[in-house]
Length: 167
Image (cartoon, rainbow, N blue to C red):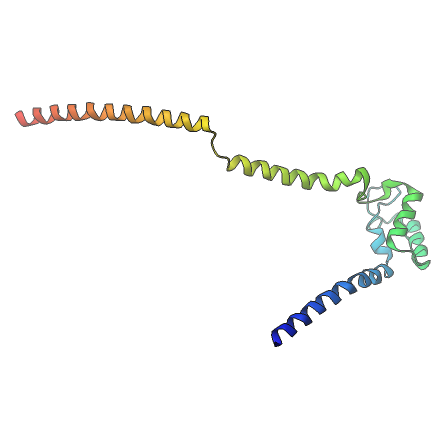
């Protein structure tokens, strides 16, 4: 009886934790920082550095814009979207996970899985029936030849023993 209660409590705690998960995600969105956003975009000056790492005047201006957007209560996604509208899609440090850019995320994983499946299949494939018949035919020929050479060996060995006995 006590075991059933313990299971019920464990299930309740698990489900309650799952229900609180979206609340914790929303709470983390409220705490958007300039550093967090600036690690997700390139500096628009063309230096090919992340905004968080660049020290140019343009980077300073963009970080100031981000601070203003955060003070307006915008989330990280909204800020990045607005920066994208101002500076273009090339400001994104990582490709979007939608549309054609989704291929950049999915293709390497699909290639790795597919390659692994092909290698596994080649490594553990069973020989075809034709290959088995050829192996059986070759083994029969081999056994016949070995039997023939055994006979020849026995005859020569008998001759050798007779010569040794005569001496």
